[in-house]
Length: 293
Image 1: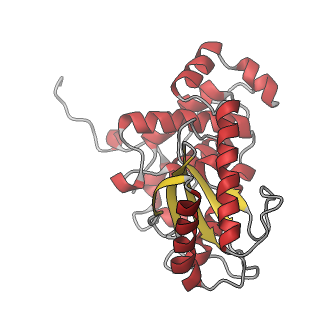
Image 2: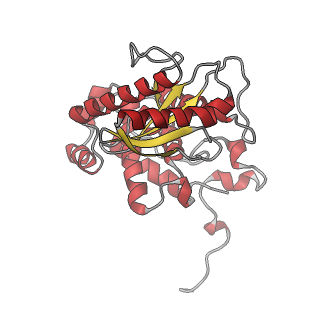
Image 3: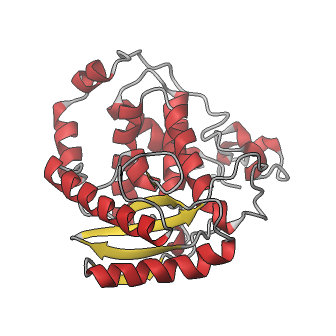
């Protein structure tokens, strides 16, 4: 009796997703992370950002700031100075005036991307940005001519080193460059914003608009969470954990930064009234029970 094997029913995962049928694809489920799992009701917590910060155990907050520090003001000023130089170079190469360098949103402007846009970049992480190329540039000019012109201008000014192509990122193979400028590692992608185009399909994403689609994804994530400050704390925590465990990065076959951000956003949507320590526990509990088939 001591060695009696468990029944098949006892070995079934607790998530109801297992009974949904093997032909139900992950794409059909969307990003409903933790769908079908029953949890105990959590005690509500204050909803304002200031009250949530007060409700978090001070020890956990100090530990998070120690292992995954935010960008200090002095480093942020250095980053802004480097990005102003990047924008000046890009505008010179597309024939645009260099005044009002940090104006956001229109053509020939620079927009934050990825972890920089989500607000979880570390002090010495690579800064991802998007340069909106004027609409009169052709895709061929964006992919071939513009990177060469910007590389030449960076070398002429003598402000950058280690200039290389940005490289592909899955389906979002936008043209761009990577380099180090004034002690800041920068990845700048080139893209155009053309109104009226249909939403991209998985099998067909236009390269010269991929950067804009990437920006819209991060916009959607930030708009979907109940509390942006709590979401950022959770994402900083999860990013650090994933990197330490060696499960961070699509190039290694694991979820990348955006995938982890979507998972964290889903947990924040599922439990909008609990604070960061409880949310972190719920994240890993859901992750361990999620049916990945």
